Image 1 (cartoon, rainbow, N blue to C red):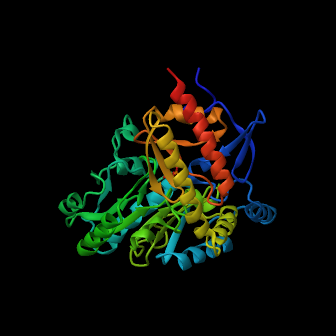
Image 2 (cartoon, rainbow, N blue to C red):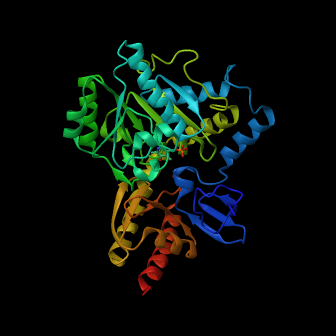
Image 3 (cartoon, protein in one colour):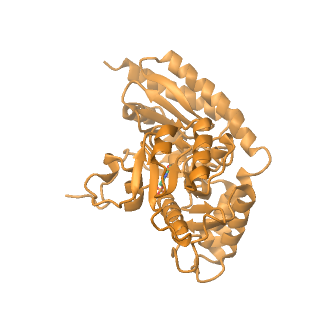
Amino acid sequence: MISSIMPTCSRAPMGFEKGAGSWLTDTDGRRFLDFGSGVAVTVLGHAHPRLVAALTAQAGRLWHTSNLYQVPNQQALAEKLVAHTFADTMFFANSGAEAMECAIKCARKYWHAEGRPERHRILTFEGCFHGRTLATISAAGTEKLTKGFGPLLPGFEQLPAADLDAVKAALDGTVAAVVAEPVIGEGGIIPLPDAFLRGLRALCDKTGALLILDEIQSGMGRTGKLFAHEWAGITPDIMAIAKGIGGGFPLGACLATGEAAKGMGPGTHGSTFGGNPLACAVGCAVMDEVTADGFLAHVAAVSGHLRQGLEGLVATYPDVFTLVRGTGLMIGIKCRVANADMVSAGYDAGILTVPGGDNVLRVLPALNISVGEIDEGIARLGTAAQRVAARP
Ligand SMILES: *Cc1c(COP(=O)(O)O)cnc(C)c1O
């Protein structure tokens, strides 16, 4: 008999009752150090006092009015994001996939507004992940995501990642946009080289194609900059963000330049819940924390410490791990054993990590994690690795 929850996800046996900072307590009272952040979501850890205060204050005032009216918190959050990014404008959604849907629609509508509707093709990269809606699985194209869900949406073409020649060959007068994840997340924490991102920007400029970045996982301070593309010194035309921006409250957004968004007039797109007062109250508090003086410097400082510790683990357990890659607090440890075995050995050692593509163990702690907690996490990962290595 099927479970009451559709079994789309194989879940670990434990569930959590409460959290504080980088720590979670399960329903049996066991404590876990959270090195996964619910997949790069809880950027300020659990139950951050400022976020709790923002949400509870808003909860006592007003929950929902719809986008038929002005939503003051939504306006405030948009202004903060405009002030700190390339964007002139944005659309708020409830998730990453919806943010990507808006990005795709925005790019196609741009060319429609330009009187060039034949420019509708969207180029994406192999190994990228953009969500689970029909458009976003069609965009990624990976069989694991698409199998059995056809017919897929036409107009997407996947190119080998980080291959500028492939992009050059594919960019013609029918391409609306190119979509890239600056740091491939689900696919196994693979940063695209800065030179590739700069080359991609230049090719888009030359051909007029819009550059869409999916910073749903890499954004909101995760790499030590507010957004990962800043490292390459480029800006996109359109960017999808979600995960960390609500600090654990569901929130997504599609940011764009005024030019790229010129097709998105009244009635072109919408969402009942997108940008609701609760989500945006929390979103404003997250933005204030992440853009506060010293916050991103902390990410850079502790990420160096984490990286060193993880390199040490790889050296100590060469039969378990092969290498560490990634940037900031978005780290992947490539495993020699099955990554799922490491994740579950981590549970036994009281630490949560997230499996990723290419047999990677993802380490995505809260951005305000302390050096002491990082040391504790490395010790626990060491215990887990030792147990896995000792297995026959
Ligand atoms: C998680 C993720 C998504 C999808 O976000 P949802 O909120 O699950 O819809 C899309 N792109 C990237 C890069 C992601 O990491």
